[in-house]
Image 1: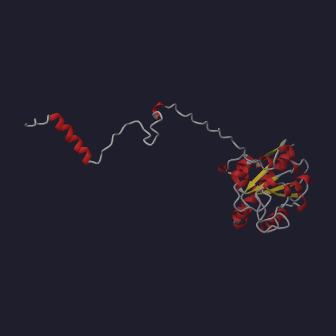
Image 2 (image 1 turned 45 degrees about the vertical axis):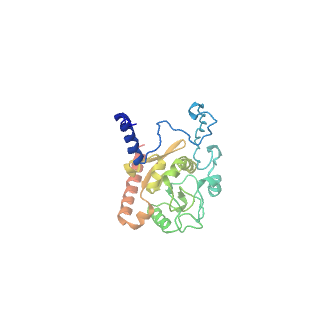
Image 3 (image 1 turned 45 degrees about the horizontal axis):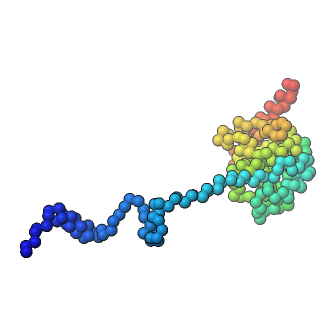
Amino acid sequence: MQRSAPSPLAADIAAAFDWWREAGVDAVFHDDPRTWLADPAKLDDRTQPARPVPDRPTPVAVPEPTIGGPREGWPQDLESFRQWWLTEPSLDEGGLAPRLGPIGAAGPELMILVPMPEEDDREMLLSGPHGNLLSGFALAAGLGLNTVYRASVLPRHTPLADWDQVRRHGMSALVAHHVALVRPKRLIAFGRNILPLCGHDPAQGAQKLQSFNHEGGRVPALFEAGLERLLGNWQLRARFWRRWLDWTDTDAWRDAQD
C-alpha cells in the first residue's frame, strides 16, 4: 500500500523542530520563573502565597561626639579650665606629643590664640621659634609677658588634624567659652584654621573679621596668617605689624573721643 505524502503543514512543523534542535534549543522557555527542582508533590510555586518580606530596621542616626562633653560640665573658672584642659578625654584622640595648657592670667591686655602647640613643645606652650617670635612682638608692642595670655585651639601638636571635624564636633563653642573665661581686652588669632571656628568663611579674608563673639559679649580681634608663615616671610611680618599699629591707634583714637 502506497503511503500518502505528508501534508505541507506537518513538513513545516518538522522542519521548524529540526532547525531549533540544530540550534541547541531543545527545552521550553516561559516568561515566568519556575522552580524545576521543587518537590512535585507540592503545589506549584505560583499558587503559594508570597512570603512576607521582613521589615528592614530604620537606620538610627548616631550623634557625633561633642568635644568637651555636655556643656553643663564645662569648668566655670579659668584655673579649673586649665586643669580640665589637660585631662578631658574628648578634647582630642591622643598622640605622641604631650598635652599643654594655656599660659597667663585672666583679664590680660592681649590673648594670643594659635591652632596647636609647636612640634617641639614639651614642657610649655609656644616654647620654640613661634613663641620667640611672639615674645619679640610683645616686647616691640610694649606688652609685658605677664599681660599676654597664650592659648591653643588643640591641646597637643596634631600635624594631620581634621579641622572640619574639629569644627563639627563643637570646638567653636569651647573656644568661645575659653575666651569668655579669660576676658581679654584684645585677641589675636594666628592661622586660617581658626577662622571657621569663629563662624567666618576663610575665602572672605581675615581682614573682614574684626571681633570675636563669645558667651555674653565680644572682644576686638585681629586675625593673622599662621606663625610658620610669618617666620618665613618678612613681608608678612611687616604687614602684621602695620595692621597691629593701625588697630591699636584706632582704638586709642576712639578712646580719646569718648
